[in-house]
Length: 330
Image 1 (cartoon, rainbow, N blue to C red):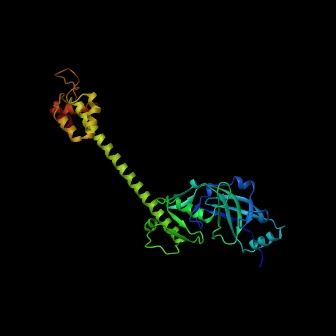
Image 2: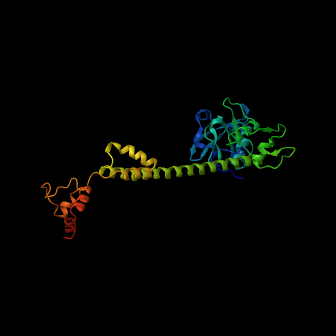
Image 3: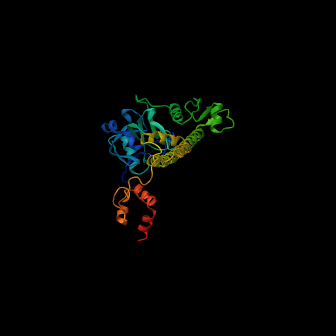
């Protein structure tokens, strides 16, 4: 068959979970070390003899991290691998990364690694196998499968101490405590342990439920808080209007305003009782000068009436009903 043009290799796609049950945020991948030594290994074997090339044009594109391969075809073994890539028989790669436990968390019901450091990228035959991502400690030591499984479970809400006893002879099986069995909905436990992938699936399912319930609870709390604040604002405005009117009518003094508002917020009924028990001391005609009493200008036109304050308009209506009626019947 003829050679196919070599396309960029996808190092990471944050929308896809790896075989350990979590995804890696592309924006959080640190390329500082890798850009100085963009080494290409074969199957993550860290030795001089397994360096088969280097990567170039490495870039982030939204959720994708990708790069172009540059094979060392002077090496006969590498030339064979490069040929399989060129002919389209190999098209998968795998990242070797270093990360801190604190950067692995549950976001929106999914386990996500938000930050890590890229060390190397290997050519691999099957991207979905257990080596699709090689995880390392901060000192560069490769994590074993037991450590990774314990780490993945430890970030799930509510399972900080899962009491898991991993079978060292067969890492695909797992033995759980009675409490954990009940929490995950198992009726009993087989003598040889439970399938690890099934347990992981149940644990991640529970984590998603916890995240969804947490989000729903937060939304309800916010709605309740907003409704309460609106109700309190409306009550304060209503109570403030009552107190202002009582000050205008002389039932309470201006310096008692805040005290009366506080009383009204505590019990509006009590405020109404207090205000209702105090007789009004001022009449609404205060501030209106009539010709018979003070020699002021009499209100004869609508223009003159409109220039009055609200209190003066009320005073004019009550103190001079005939003039008020005549004014509006012109």
